[in-house]
Length: 162
Image 1 (tube, one colour):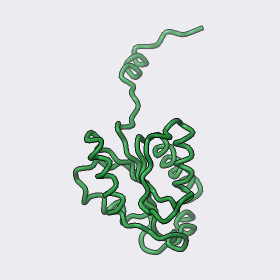
Image 2 (image 1 turned 30 degrees about the horizontal axis):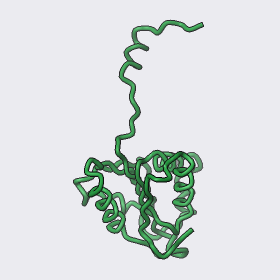
Image 3 (image 1 turned 90 degrees about the vertical axis):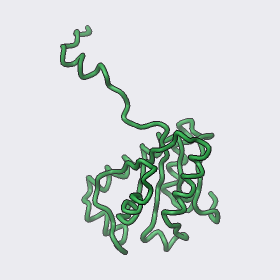
Image 4 (image 1 turned 45 degrees about the vertical axis):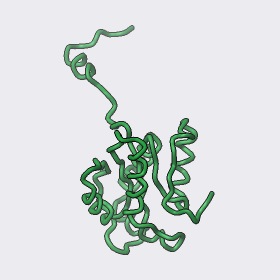
């Protein structure tokens, strides 16, 4: 049996909308120890591709920024014409290995914040990543499974293919 909502419940749920700004571009910028597996690309190249997308979709101004590197977060301030969103978590500085960085965050944070990044990337309207990244491969697979085969995936490195 359905119970009628109280006044407070009615108020709370009356204007409930999804948070995700639309359209949304997800950028996954991998640096650090990934250099042993692939050629790394600077943040500026990711942003060059973001600007190319914006030429086609002028209302695109929101970016979900997924990265382990504090340097990338700081560089995002150089692009005031974009609105960046990202998790509020301590990031790698310098040449810390991924294993050391994840261990420093603790099990719960090092598990939960990547999952938030994963789901946000899968839900985004557009994606810019690196074909040499296993994480980007997983994101692309989830996006394809979720019906975004035609949504677009731009890669910063053209020398790697699945």
